[in-house]
Length: 83
Image (cartoon, rainbow, N blue to C red; front, top):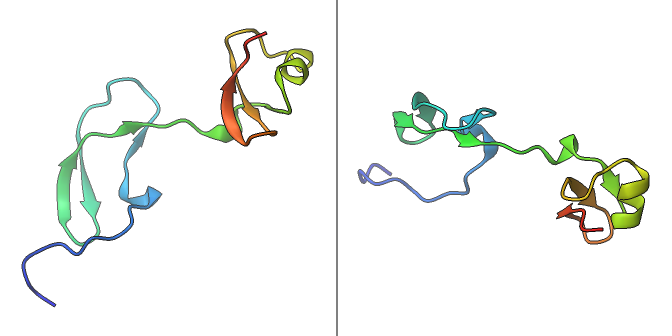
């Protein structure tokens, strides 16, 4: 199927060049189906870097300060401790 167009597909983590520093510089990355392209890395947040707690009270008991992030196991989302 050589039509000169890219076939749409789901983007997977391996397609991305992840950065852990703010304002990363562009890099050349091989993108499957498109070849070597100049891309700007995206900042990455790994959920595993945060503690898992059921609510703000449990997060507080676990040492999470007000305003810090934790993984809320009640709703399975990243959450900011509010109280």
